[in-house]
Each structure stands twice: as structure tokens, then as C-alpha cells.
Image 1: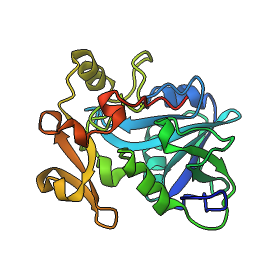
Image 2 (image 1 turned 90 degrees about the horizontal axis):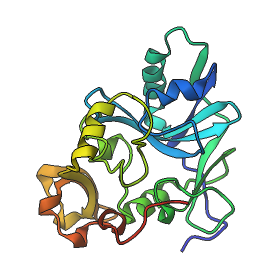
Image 3 (image 1 turned 90 degrees about the vertical axis):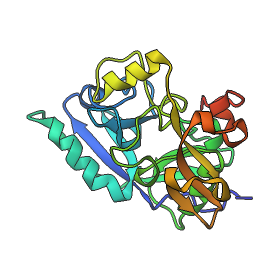
Image 4 (image 1 turned 135 degrees about the horizontal axis):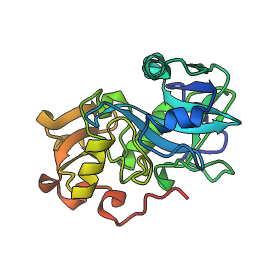
Length: 245
């Protein structure tokens, strides 16, 4: 059991800052979730086909927006967003000041916007120690996939990555990249495959994205018809609400 003295810094996360002219309006036209309202939210930047390229948590810092993303993908995310900036007076760059923190304990900190059970998440200067391994184990225990190793790069449709079930998409906002396929899948109510965390012995090697032998778990991209309810987390079956608030 983790205590209040345990490390909270996630060293495998980085922060990208967007500052300048109407950054909320700029990002609103690109990502899956509504960034014009209350933050934080989990969101994806998709391909035109609606497949996940990046996923991140969006935070507000005054008029700026901060993207809590994978450290290994931060520079690529900056580059991708910069392609869409055109001549807007917007600065998009990594910010080494704040770090991403996490704790499963009861704190006066924001809950992870995906799932209450994921615990508390916040931005602050880095502290000693690294909670990344503990966070990964906790996240996978609750069946939540994230990052390029699990979602892939242009391999998984956003709803197959559980963007709908984990509050990672707004169906009420206007257009964004990949919106057409995402909205069509939701309207038809047809998400035949999803990313699921399964015990490693029950993983299908042909459908496996990544294995974590030290945890005895794997992330598979599986047909729901082939997946018993016992392998689906409560938030996927409706037995556990995903809402963080």
C-alpha cells in the first residue's frame, strides 16, 4: 500500500505549453475533446482516419494550455501541432518547469479525468523519486491503456482506444481531425474491437500490443465478441462508472 510519503513525480511524462493568441480555439479544432470548458480533460490528436497518434491530458494555466504527454513523444507532439499553427501567433514548446504528479491516495488534488479509480493527478515542480512504475501498475490494474506502446501510432481508432468510455471525446463539439469516422462509429453504435488489459496467459499474441511480464499483464486489441465479461473492466461493462467527477 502506498503512503503519503511515496514519490509522486511521473518521470515518463512531459509538459508541452501552448501560449499566445486564442490557444483554446486553436486546439479545439484539432483534438477529440472540448477544451473550451472545464479542464483537465483527456484528449487525442488523431489521423484523418480517426486513429490515435497522440493522447494527453489538457490542463489550463491562465490563458495558456498545458499538455501532459509521454516524454518520449513530446517533441513529436510539438512538431505535429506546429504543422497546424500556420501564421497564428502561438508558441508551442516543451516546458521543463512543471512535472506531472500522481497519487492513488485521498488528496485535495484533481482526479484523473478518465476514471475516478485512477486517483489524483496534478502539475507541480518535480519532487524526489519516481512514481512511473507504480502508476503503470495501478493504471493497468484498472484496465486503462495509454501511450504509443499500447494505443499505437495511427493503428487504433479512438473509440477502440476507449475514448468514448473514458471521457476522451466530445460528441457535441465542432469538427476536429478524425471527427468524421469517430462520429460515424458512435452514431452506428458499432465498436467491434477495443483495447483491453488481460492476464498475460490469456493474451492473444496475434492481437497483443504490448506485454508486461513483470506485472503478468498484456494489452490486446480484441474483438468484443471474443472477450468474456470477466476480462472486461467494470467501466467497460457498465458495472463501474468511469466519471472522475
